[in-house]
Length: 158
Image (cartoon, rainbow, N blue to C red):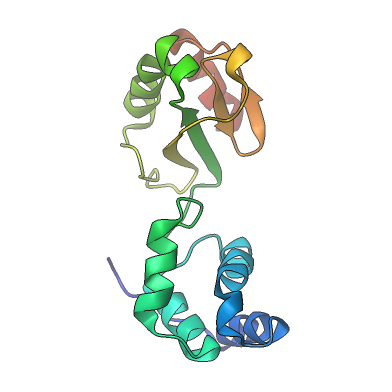
């Protein structure tokens, strides 16, 4: 993965977030949440700066980022697509819906389209089992989705 260059503004923003949490090592997860909310993802360069500011090892920060599925080290698309793969969704055809998103967008799970518009991921359960299979695009929920409906949904966001 290519290294990113942190601008002075980004560096200052991260330092500001860390100090808002008192630069306490016990606050690393809260800082990571806030920084990811600000920048969209947590590349190694941001993790290193957070580790330095919070006075913990870079390995500690990396361990947290890779352990919790909420955190991502790759940028999400403008319209992140999450296909639920919980039991109800899976039984009702979520895998076929996922395959159709992969085919239409020409990307795999965990990838982002070259134009940065869409990213594709899977979730374990969104708690809307009665609407299975369920797909989230950003915060919007699409229920009882079939592979035939995928193209129309993508076109809503193009």
